[in-house]
Image (spheres, rainbow, N blue to C red):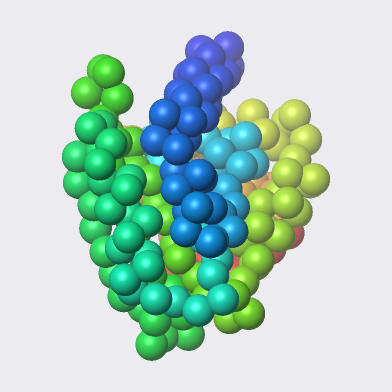
Length: 195
């Protein structure tokens, strides 16, 4: 477990360094948005999957304003690629951004920025999920989640919330139990589980 803890600590420290280096929060705040950290870094459960998740809120969604903020982020020399998705006309009422930051070791970190209309369906929802998970975590469940993430092959793409639900609600503690739990609890799209 010591090695797993060391990897988690190192990656979480690196994630915070990237947030500071890119000024991602300042860029969005300067654009008049509220930006909140969500996901595994927020809950202290970032392990080896290098992604940093943000939800960003404005009164209305304006594609040009969103692109303007991303233009500033794109000027950072370590940002190597950006993807855009327009989901304004869906229930999610958002603009999805994904940017890839290359660190000094040539490792790519994915910055997920979901630009959401204030007052829409998911306004504040995932912040509340992260808060609830953080409050319910014990040292034993935290270690179980980090171990499961560590043992998951790098080729597998599993959302963090799946691990949290399996461990907190499903009582899963081993990778064998986790693969069995996944078979019995298929996931598709947005997972609206909250402990």
